[in-house]
Length: 291
Image (cartoon, rainbow, N blue to C red; front, side, top):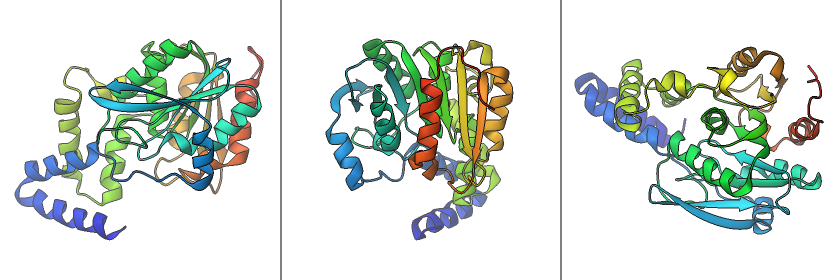
């Protein structure tokens, strides 16, 4: 734990005893905002420089979009929390080599986009607009929180795709709140406060978000042919059991691949993972999933 995180933990835990609602408000403010914006690595700069840039505005925030190729066979890539579009560089390169047209974006508060906060509803709206521009996607590939957002957008008919890929996917919003508390070392009462504020302030009109945003719920409404889930056995942020649960929900439509030694983020940069995803995306329609 770095010095800033240790200071936040001590301060919030101490305040939670005397003023739990005050501490809850502060914890909720932290939960809503990505604390870091990763800088572009040199090889990512070269890749992003080759993209066609676009922009759109969602809730007053400028969102930067990217695409490569001639527009044929589009594939949508959806990054996770405290990440950015450039982190899909291995997948963009693999898809381009096979004649696909990768499409992606920096979410609000991430990468080159504006704002300091974002919600899954903004993700859905961005994906809806990209779908309106590019048409049906051959596949949607999401990492971490981006996987949850991808399942949600497809279920809500915001975007249409033939296949879904989840890389180290976090399938439900409850895990996000729980992991936030665990990573900062906060007391359980603060998790309850954050959950309450998520419902009351972020999504007051969205019903039961703990079920509605879940990737494993109502799989029959996720209109895709097949689902690939890739998860690392050594993932400390999101255990592989999360993807096992989603795979079980989708039954014969799903294939689960468990890797080792990659963790939560390196799985996104791993060449073997990118190759496995490309094999899945390029397989003929109706092809039997390899288990």
